[in-house]
Image (tube, rainbow, N blue to C red; front, side):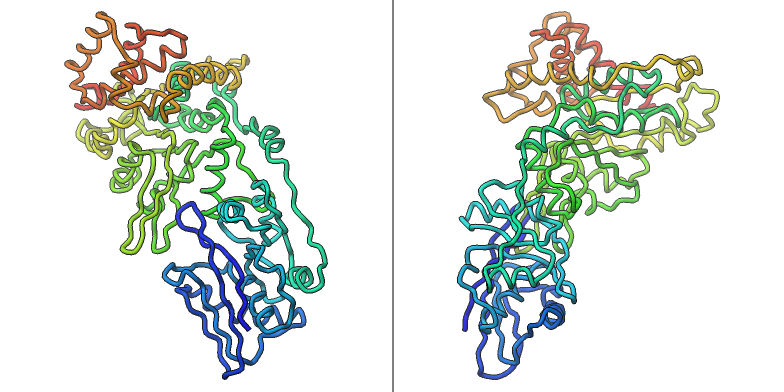
Length: 511
């Protein structure tokens, strides 16, 4: 008897429905699995055999042929165990299968018949709804994640026995129902850190506010213990809250990477990713034999924090150049190409010298040559793509011992939101959400300068020997500073402040 059962495969951050055809006949004995399965799927026969035996069923001693169509698409992982097991039972007349074609069935089996969670549940559920399936049956740990998708019945099960009884005896399964919007709005302002905890550093806080208001990349330069990491960790608390669309995009990427917790569903706050400096190129941008999203994609719609940036391998930093411009990363293989979104805000930190101190600090023991060699670890093209460079001075004792709390993240965030509202209205006819994303056409249209501002930026270009990209960055940052002041035009003091945020372009650093 031939039975068709449906599963799903992940390709990039999207899913594709897989038809699993199970044919059982009496013309011999054997178990044949075809359709480009990987080793995890080939090993499924042992898991399925033990699981069925432990719930009172068995793989029949006949010729079993299982085809996973489309046969030219590689299938990966152990998530097809449940689909294949139910297909074998239905094809061998051990259970009824009248409604089986109405559901996507996925799950990894343990030897006792219980189910283990799987990756990529959200894109699978979205695809199931788009293709008109009635529901999806999957491990209970993944049910909340799948329930984000409306107009789809989601059944979370703990054991294969529950699925068998559902099809064979009509015993109902518990349906997972989730009020996505309510859960999203309840947890949208959950932040573990607040800017009020940062003592002093008013200049750095201002630079952080400008960066958040325009979505600009920023690098913090300062001695050890000056608060660079502390400032970076608080950036998500002043960024605009995720929209529901952004939350779904972000959750989908984390779902594919298997980063969603078993009790979680929709991601409600912007991601903050902080990879260690020993990270490889592939782990940062994504890829591998079976491509997976990298850290820059996991930071999509959020913050990527690179602490002690010069300690990262130069090749790792250089592979970020294209994603920083295009806001997506393309992974190409001989047989296929996948795209991962990578629209993130880069926050980096570094010491000003190998010893950790500024050249004019008495604690600095680095020679001019050592400092130049240290600074050369960061290439000019990469630094050009970082809009704001800010020096973070060490905090004095009087500021540290002060009892008065600093400005709260909530107050800074309100100003950021006002600036973002201005940008949303300005770019409503374009596919742009912040000043950091504007191109040459938009710069020409929205960053007009008066005579004083023009003279000022001309002088800066000549004195600091700035590149054309740095020129564009200064105009973008000036546009954001003007938006924070709710000024329609860019004025000379906006340009002046934006130029101050190009520390690494100065002779002081370039030697």
